[in-house]
Image (tube, rainbow over all chains, first blue to last red; front, top):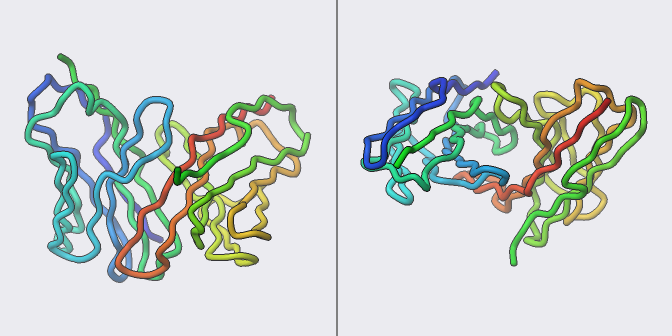
Length: 112
Length: 115
């Protein structure tokens, strides 16, 4: 079946540091890929998405590129802020637009 | 305001006592889904529904039931809850049904404890 693997956290960075959270996937066909963010005590919010190979999703300074050759969708941000502290989930949906699969999540803490 | 609502937000119950968690969305979305979130496992899909009267199993459906009699509502039913169903539950909905991929809107979550 389809699966998503993320780097284990927690990740702790100082403000203005560069962020990378690795995500790789296993799926048949051509899934669409997402990053969701969960702030403390809240539900998940879509951060960015990419629907085909070489697409780059971006939002709020975060970016991720759909790499089919390496089955990866790594999340990056050039300069993190304290307000970016949250749990980040990589996810995919299959060809048929039905079954969502999430990774285990990576907790990010940004220190002032 | 576009939103997904869940009730209750917190629930403590005992083994075997039937319970229902309600989910409602006001965006006229076709797709609705239930997830459970457990530490180290991320979100796992329990059931999903592509439209009224159309439901299907996700990755972890055992011990749960759902129904979709109206487009806006998608209740999650635990007929005989057990302690291993203690978890944080999220309902989600979305509108587009095909590619390009669509955004899911999540409810605030229901924290369930079964003793």
